[in-house]
Length: 172
Image (cartoon, rainbow, N blue to C red):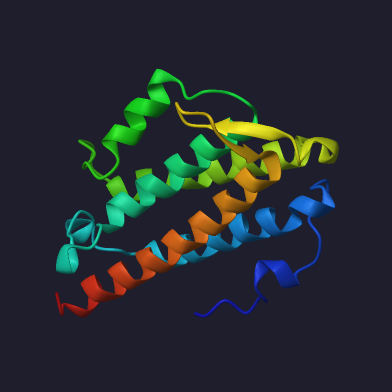
């Protein structure tokens, strides 16, 4: 059944999220809805298949989770932990457990929840403060990191959609 609700951004402001961060929160919630609907009943056997050498659906799910974690860490002015760096290096590698689709979805959903908590707690007065990205500490801003997190998430939602549709069509 198709979702009868309008897109998240048309449902009104989210309580407690600062006004300037509403679009970020809306994008993350929209991504979560679309990904969970797309991956419902997805055949786990195809999770790591790379049609036409595109990234696998499993990679996209891992990357979506990881990029939110990393960008929101930088927005807090922190460097990545060894655990985050290890997770980055594991992106694209199958999990050893069964039920991988649900595990990856749960991880993504949990990361969106954490991102929303951070957005809700954010002080709007620091949004233009500079934050370093990566080992080189390439300069960005808090709002720049949040905006890129939303944009990058939606970009991968689109790529995941195409990959899943190709896999489900059997045309690869």
